[in-house]
Structures are given as C-alpha cells and as structure tokens.
Length: 157
Image 1 (tube, rainbow, N blue to C red):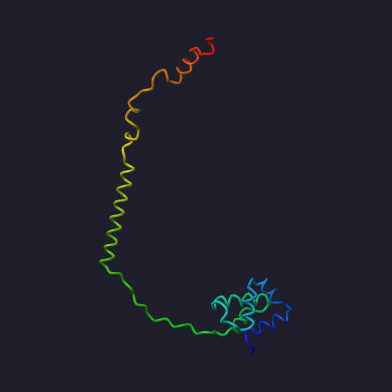
Image 2: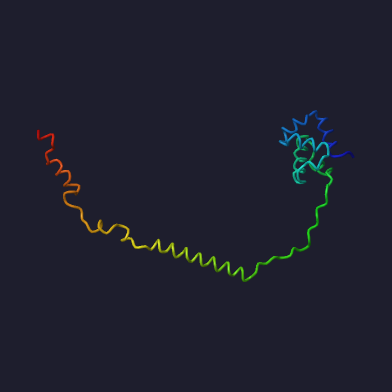
C-alpha cells in the first residue's frame, strides 16, 4: 500500500485533473494540495483541517471519503490529560469584600437614579415666568385685531 499523497496524486492523474482544477473545485489552496500529495503533513494545519481537506479532495475525485480517511495514519498520539485538574478557589474573604464593594456601588447608582426620577417638577421652570400671566394685548385673538386697527407709517402719507 503506497502513501496517502501518492494515492491522491495517482487518482487525480487517472481522472486527468490538474491540481489547479482540484483547488478550484475544493476551494483548497494549491499550496496545501501539493503538501497533501507530497505527504508533507508538517506544513499543513491541525489534523482536523487535514481531515476536512481530504474529505473535500475525495469528493472532488469521486472516491469515498472513509476510504481516503482510513489511509490517513495518525501522525501523533494525543497527549494524555491528567485524570483530575486541581480546583482553584478564590479566597473567601476576598470574594466577600468584592461583593460588598459591588453592592455599595449599586446602592449609590440606585440612589442617584431615584433622585433624578423623583425630582420635583415645579422647580424646572424659572420662578418669574410661572408668576406672570399673559397680557391681554398679546393674546392670539386680540393680537390680530390690534394690528389691523393701527395705522402704519406708509398709510399716513
């Protein structure tokens, strides 16, 4: 059984396809396809991407993906993780202090918002405007009558 790269190259050449045509079909850069065909897996991204590239390559060639993926040998054994990770807990007194500070800040913001919302409305307008009434000569109905009754400078001459 030959290498994966030589198998890909042989299948592509049997179908008389160029690397550029495969690149256009699969949307995989030509550089990466050449690395696949040369078995240069160190130049390729993570294994999950390589598997995706191989699936797309297999579809473009019309061969089953699983057959191609079965030829892929795992390049590295995954690192074994420790059985349990040590738990990291914050200091309980430091945590309580942070909660207390957050509550004080929230209380101040709540008080400020409440004072803005419940501010008396009568202090919004200046005092002198609220005590004066509109003179009768500036009222809308009398204003039109008073302007038409007064002679203008041009009508005097």
